[in-house]
Amino acid sequence: MDVEWLRQHCLSLPHTTERVQWGDNLVFKVEGKVFAVAGLEPGSHFLTVKCTPEEFAELVEREGIRQAPYFARTHWIDLESEDTLPPAEVRDLIDRSYQLVVANLPKTKQAALTKKK
Image: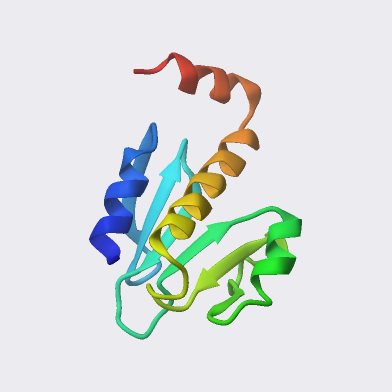
């Protein structure tokens, strides 16, 4: 699993955009809202995603997962490296983060997303 795999998966989610932002981070957004951040520099974090408060409490107890700097108060986590979790679990975290962000969009934007092709 590498950044290109992660990039392809994020871009497969509907209406996702990507942008290099905050130095060397690849930021994935839906309707302008961040749902995943991939570190492009070796030694930095591998992936930052949003999770539920319950998931947050459980995940930060695991080796290689920490509270995301600047994002922790809103339940974001950092995976320190690409081998912190198996690919299937990383894919699930990305998908849930995307769903959480979409669920927090205004209802009109959510409706527009389902109508866009």
